[in-house]
Image 1 (cartoon, one colour):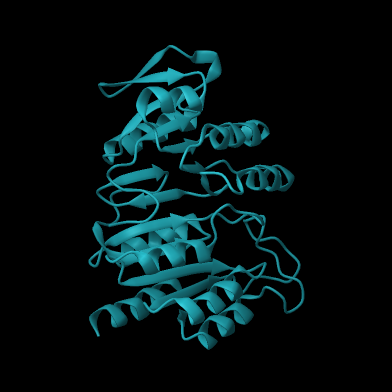
Image 2 (cartoon, rainbow, N blue to C red; image 1 turned 60 degrees about the vertical axis):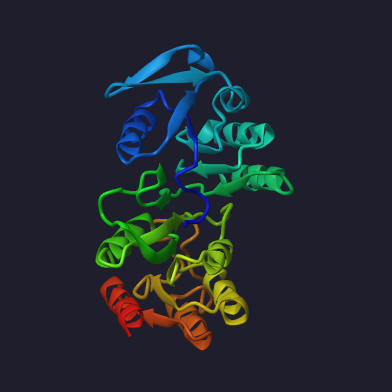
Length: 292
């Protein structure tokens, strides 16, 4: 099994005709993803060829869903238009909206997240690499050739750290990897993914990757302690980060002792989660649990 996406997912790409959307649509197709079309109101009615696969362009997400049965939208939409694009997907009733776009204003994210509450749509992102269930579906920009189907679940704020842990544990394979994004507000949290992995019979161990800033990892630790029976291994990026300076992601900033990597490490360990100080050490901890 998998979480959030599987071999039955039917993907539409908002922004498929742009440079990034086009490039990654081709990559998703090569990974075996069922992509049924794109959305661009200015190019509706056209078709785009991807190495012999001809995909239609629809004017709206609702039209794409009605014509193709799409269940997932992946968004490669410029920041200025992202809020409207996500709200369009939510109003159409898409089951999953994966927002790859970086640089979305926090106020816009808050608006489209609030708009989605109580709807049929789960949002992943923004500023994220997406979600992959190897061998089944790849919705986003995660490389498809760094792992295989397997039993490790990964949930991470960082795209590159997602890739590294997937690769280091490739002999065990991955059930699903979810890049939730590093912005201050994201649609799907560590806790959402942990709950889904706990309910997934094919996920045997979860790697939780966090970073400095906010309290998402502390809240995830409390959730694990109360609700997760599967082994969880953690890593927190930013042990050497200077105080008061944003480090890469918009949400990665600490103030005093709040949000530091050390504080998050202590919270995770207090919940019984083994925490590595480097990605390699984290993979070793997971390997020991999987083989022990």
